[in-house]
Length: 407
Image (cartoon, rainbow, N blue to C red; front, side):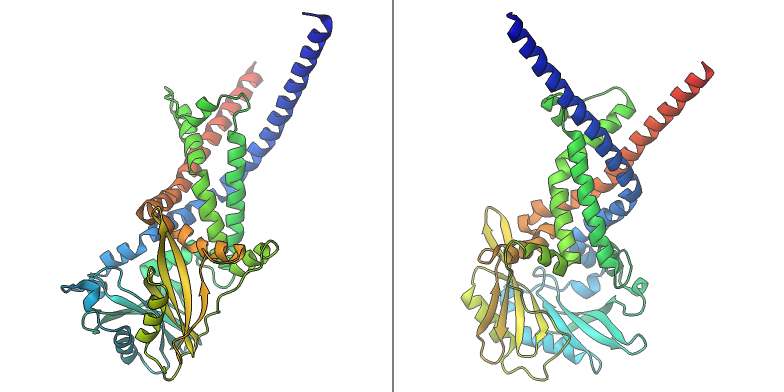
């Protein structure tokens, strides 16, 4: 080899080794950030993740725990034989004390389930609102029962699933709990990204990094599980964490997005009930279904505006994907005032409308719900395997120091 070529080759190797050493030094720093962030925040993340896994199937769990309230005897024809929405809502209203009102009407989840009217009942002692569910048989419009969902004065009086919801998005902390969870979710998102960074194989051995080895020691097994679980779950974790930040802090999320694209905000719900509706609720639903026949009614907000309602549809968009459309209808004319559709909106509005379907997994149907369910279970797995790895390394370091001291 000529001397000049030899020197150039040696120089390039030296530069390459310097780059590798620099990257290794950076990775050691981020590994420490990842380690201590995970050890300090991992338990909270595990609680949020496990409660999130439960809530993926909260409707099925609720039906299992409360069959007398929610299960009804289906009739031949299914939804075709339902009583009108107006009858079901009026039946729920008739069962309420003075001052209470229906906020949301939820369509039956299947032909053997009751409709759910979410109602607000003033709590004079707490000077606030208790939130109840009033269940109505869709075939007879008869109230099957009611239960307290959220208590105004004591969250521990909530229903079981109401407590799980409050733990998941507010850690049972009033007023500022949702913002704490949003901030923690940002830290968890950073934790996921640092984990992905320290996973990157500087040696270029991608096949080894992407596969699960079969070691003969438990500590090595623990490492392989931590590595593989973190990498293969990182995408769904980032999606769930980002959508969770939006659901806990929507105004702050929109403020950031509007620096890139102006959002058209949907109407803000008000705690207000009209004395008399000029048109029936069924007229409003019919107006929406006539204009958007591919959407399936999911729930209807009755407290947005005394002169209008908001109907939320689940809309198939192809390849198994589901979207959410919100339509506001004028109750005096049946005219459609506003449509919030992620497929026909600005970037900001569209992105925010996708967050709830992504967070719940409903955007992908059952496969999506299962992925979100598993992502919640990933959190304690990463915490336990990460803690074990730190503990074994700590013990090994102490043994080495003790050996050096004796020597």
